[in-house]
Image (tube, rainbow over all chains, first blue to last red; front, side, top):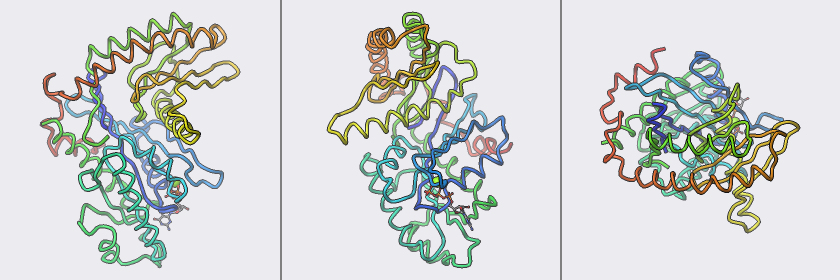
Length: 196
Length: 162
Ligand SMILES: Nc1nc2c(ncn2[C@@H]2O[C@H](COP(=O)(O)OP(=O)(O)OP(=O)(O)O)[C@@H](O)[C@H]2O)c(=O)[nH]1
Ligand SMILES: [Mg+2]
């Protein structure tokens, strides 16, 4: 749910990075944090375990600039990918305006990708939201690894509708900003549709 | 929720602001925040100083959401009030409506009893304001055009140019 504040002339949108455990969601946000002008970003908050697995969420607020005199903010969240944290994933998904699905390209993680995508669908459904009508970007991460599955195969499994997709290698930033821009664009287009 | 929006107009903001400013005085509080359940800061009053208000809003919402989850696990609908006591500052959190949270920060110039009493009174007024706001949001077109009705691809590209 976007929040348009006419008093402060601000608009806030919430974007959630979803995907199986260790697929690279937190790494996406860390790269964005590292490479964003300090004036445009707030603090990055990570509620993580001692071993750096996301426990509740990561949060990164970005204020990218103004549109029609309105400061446009994106609040980026990641969910904890580990299967047993589903209660937390449901909470974080509430009120999201757009979703990035980060898939792990390693062949042995294909089943985990499929399960996580299905879990996303179920959790959105529980809130009365259809995945098909939500701004959505598919990111194939970890393309640098030798055991990465072919893109065609991943597309057939995870993105049969051929929605906007990117290959990525999050630790060195490959595909990270492309993904962010694409989801921001879709969210803003969606807002435009809603305002009509 | 996707497909819904929260719209806050100037006059609503003023009404919320009036209530929380009064509450600062009545409760002898340091700072007060109104936050929505998605972690967005709606209004603030008092000595905000160098508090990172955006982080505060996001963590408050996470905290309330997690606490409500715990409540349901033990067969309660919600734990609508929570209180975190620190050495100097304390934080008192209440639900205003299912969508809105009131967070009050106070120190030993005030007391939990006083804060609780004054908050209870203020929450009624705030709830009425947000109820009206929710109804307005259901038919936003009647209240002037959204600035986003005619944004262009160029506007969006410009956001990422720096
Ligand atoms: N080789 C390689 N490693 C990656 C890539 N992206 C992330 N990693 C590594 O994968 C590990 C897990 O990354 P995280 O970003 O913490 O994963 P996550 O999706 O947040 O995991 P959870 O918080 O458990 O859901 C880290 O060691 C990252 O450095 C990538 O594109 N290539
Ligand atoms: Mg993580």
